[in-house]
Length: 397
Ligand code: SF4
Ligand code: SF4
Image 1 (cartoon, rainbow, N blue to C red):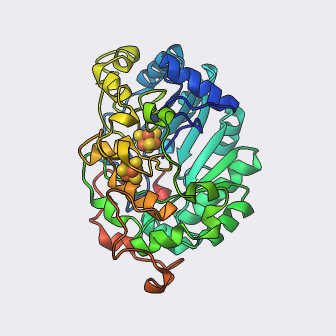
Image 2: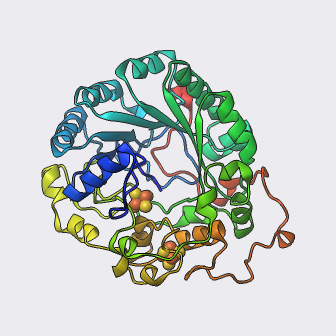
């Protein structure tokens, strides 16, 4: 899940944390408190699994971005994630962050960190950025660099983590996990060494234009079984692996996530969708106001879907445990349906067969699958060359 903030709402369970209560209120009042805004899809890395088309231009200019932020603040948005592409390719990045902070947004950045030197780190600290996410793929530089397709990128990204944490900024190392796996314990140790939190994400998603090529980079069944058995992954996640409880009325009357209810996504070109992972375009800021789009029939349809309406999931015995992503279901052709990727993940997490992933010959009996952790697969060889618009030489910036 690509949640912009850790607000757990799925249709109104009792919320005890402050963020949970804020989220529940926002959801009840249909306030978009959490917004993910991509500032550009251009990037200085060419990651093998990326779901963006870096050749798409037409980014909103500074005035358009500031205007969007003004509208979001007026609509009640509080949590802002600025992402890309690579945000540091925007010459106006500090002007945009300063404007967001002047509107009292809680700002989180997603960057590869390659272009963050001392001056940039100082500026983000001065501006009061709350958190920075930086993707690291392996504790081995050559494995990381092979995925970003930028020699030297591991060293630059790790330096950026250190620069930011040394200035008191919270940094989370995000680990998109893919074929070949990774040494999760060594990555956790690396994060600790540089003062960052760590989060593993084992879901590689299709491209926004529907091209499912990156999905082939997901962990194999054996690797996924190993992932969910690794103590370094499971710290704090033990409950997620327990057998699912039966779904109650509250859950059936709820919905999968906050996308379209209290959060949304805005592309660099101003298109508004329920989530970065849910590419249902509901309108464009270049043709209408944010609130008009937020009140559009498309958003209303998303909000109208309750778990009890879902075609397969409503009767699934794993519903209470599953993190069904309606965006992935949408990309598979039906936002009212199941997501095969979540069916697979839920099975490997709980070991309980799911409707689209019944236990078969893929049952991850360890004796049938030798350990794979830490092996490095040359992923770049599995995919076509990067599309136009990628800039792979960090020295060029
Ligand atoms: S496991 Fe599959 S069918 Fe069950 S709730 Fe999740 S996505 Fe739906
Ligand atoms: S649409 Fe998917 S990625 Fe987005 S918030 Fe919902 S579950 Fe998470």
